[in-house]
Length: 166
Image 1 (cartoon, one colour):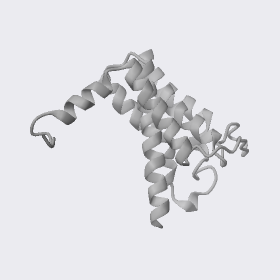
Image 2 (cartoon, rainbow, N blue to C red):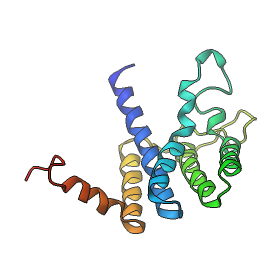
Image 3 (cartoon, rainbow, N blue to C red):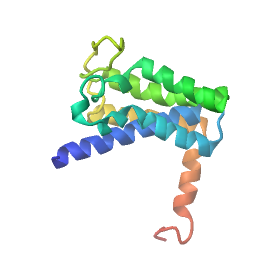
């Protein structure tokens, strides 16, 4: 895989993780540690389709079944069935839906009507430089507004012996 594609994927994955984390931490009542991992894991979950063997074909392709509202609903329902807490199900719903919303705005779109193979998209460059900066800025702004996560991160960075230069 060429270096430009690798960098693109790393930034796109990081963006999905940060947006999922920010929405979960900003708008749910799950505890911070749980909210962090729920936001990251379920913000990235639709891209698990990168691990499907190419021979499987449709709908097990990138932006196939895992990029559909039906998949998101199944995941949220499954998590609720296991955990039995609305807060956790809501957190998972925010994280996975953030991924679908972001990707639905991109030129490739998502499978809104799965199992019918169709996509619609406004064709925005959400994974380009401008879109990425906007999504990160909004996410960090949400974390600063609704949580003390950024303060904690700053304290962690400035700890003596924690790699600080001062």
